[in-house]
Length: 305
Image (cartoon, rainbow, N blue to C red):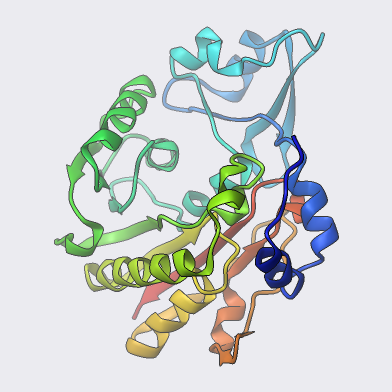
């Protein structure tokens, strides 16, 4: 089946990146990538268990690997008993970045605003060595089921689940991860459906929700606390525009420079459709799929001063 890109999509993205490169990579399958779950295993042990598989290290994270069967006989990584037992988590490599950048530490109080299905929650729990508290929230009851299954499978015991609109969350948190619901234009390689439902009206509507989520998350962040805002969207309205709105409304919101060794990044968007953004936005991370052969991602790290 021929995959078609809508005219307005082509025009918009031709102004944002090298569209030929973007289209070419978007039509290629993603590499299968796994993260070692250090709550139940370690790199050495997992390599011994998966001796029929080639594990190629992810450049920016020493506990994650591209995985491919040595004899090319299998692709069903999710059916391996080590996956069922929680020794590893199937996780796209760019998705590893938000927790790595937030860097939650032992005994901290952390909020994951939109947690399901739990890839980033379980990653943070491992980073925290099952100490402290993670509040893993989502907005729909049906989304708590996969979250619960993955928390149990991975041996997570420092996490409580909540069912709440992220815009209404209360409390005080030392660190907050807001991996916001988005258009998913950076994840076309995982879901071609994104191209079929794409329209500018959807983008604008999503950006309003993202701003509400970000504003409330910042409100409940403790002073000197840090938060990460991320999406798998490549839309400036959902990324630079949302973060810029927070900077305009809150003088105590400061962006922190993000540097990830081994990761190729692209310039952020500082001017879009007649709107100019704060130069501080340059501290954010914008990743196109063609940069590292991954999904596309946007990450901002924000401190409350």
